[in-house]
Length: 148
Length: 148
DNA sequence: TATGATTTAATCGTGTGCGATTTAAATGTT
DNA sequence: AACATTTAAATCGCACACGATTAAATCATA
Image (tube, rainbow over all chains, first blue to last red; front, side, top):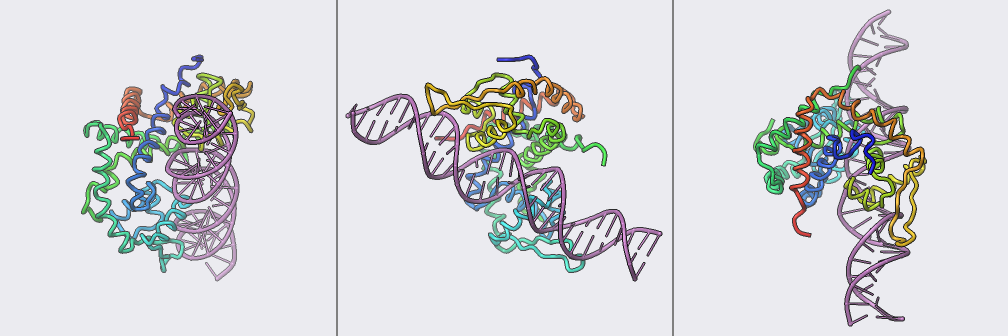
């Protein structure tokens, strides 16, 4: 067991905890989302559209922090599942609006129980969860890419 | 802007912050790791082997929280890059030991600066980072899967 | 008004993640 | 010994992520 560089010890690395925790939580979502044939990133996009329908791909990307290389195929899959419809803007053909279908809209009510289901699986107090979320949001916001 | 189900608002979801923060930090690693032609998960595996060389795939999997379906191809890529060697246990042919090559070992010294480089990019105080890490570790440990 | 720059989405290639299955080896049980 | 069970790694299929590039539409401006 080498410890020439204690800073390289996995146990000391915030980033690994972050990486592991994120995957862990996504795995917890899977059995719940499978009932609706959704993946976690697809669920994120639906959360965004339930908040505000008829967004541009660009706007969804900004909110989900995903670019079109990830979003386009994902949106196509949701379209295939009849949860949404994509439509080019007739004014500006570069842009593409995304609208929920009736099926996509109706899923919102069914999914409303998911957050509380997930919370139930966590033994962490609500205070700590809020605290954790604040720290994570701080981490993202403070680390803007330098330059350009 | 609908708010029939405030619990479905993305801004209220710890899980999204976690998901976004994890990808954000991985993106910050990329330009640094590119110098050594490493991805972040590959770097994780090297961190583990620098701590203790000659581990079984199973042991690496336990520490990285990855299964062989992810690890095997990743290890093959690292082997391709001459950073490690895989060797079947002659006693128990099911098992596979992973050893660092000289090149793999020598990379440790070069990577020793990475954690401090990453810290420099974060404007967060060390106290908050430690606190964040503790909360994340708590989140993982407390959420054991229920039942087999 | 031509044309170069910018913007938006799509496409491409590579590398994860992970559920599910397969293969082969070892172990346990009768 | 014979056979079912378990274990470890590999394989398969699918869906992300993301850097890089491309294609098309729009904008800016000379």
